[in-house]
Image (cartoon, rainbow, N blue to C red; front, side, top):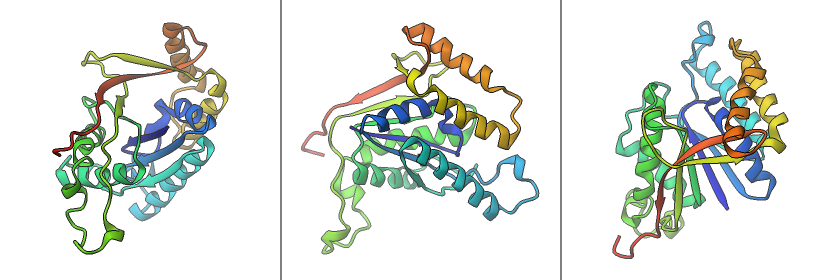
Length: 233
């Protein structure tokens, strides 16, 4: 299968790194994408936006490599996202190229606007990616090489758990990959000097595991199953 994980900033993927590694390890294609470079991170007050962008891109690419995923950055601007159609269209064209079977993203009620807008455009893009005239609206009519095939296959849309929205939960057993999960969390924690120990982070995964009969698990909510697109689209 093809799994696309879409988040706002490098380190947002910490909620699903075990799941992404599990899919990659079994031979699935995994694409890990970020809508921004997280260039306004407050830990970099003395650095230029360009330097922060370089560092955070390196972080994302390094994590993707560890997971066996392909990295992709949209560069929509940290804290500048609006959730508008143009942003969703960029994501829709990525769907049309990658053809994911499942998408995993932020919850759509998170306090951070970049997180909410990333969830919004990820969801909107599913429909946009199904309509040929939309994904190809800027392509030259006579240039077949530039034209994209719409993504019309079934797709499952998952999100990080919401504190206010009731949806079906899905647990993924990540026990086999918990060492890598701990390594990636510790990397970010040490770099940003987070006041949270790796042990505390892993306890939350152990709690998810107790809910589902595993030693460690990651937890998501299924927002929607998209059936194949109708021909009239």
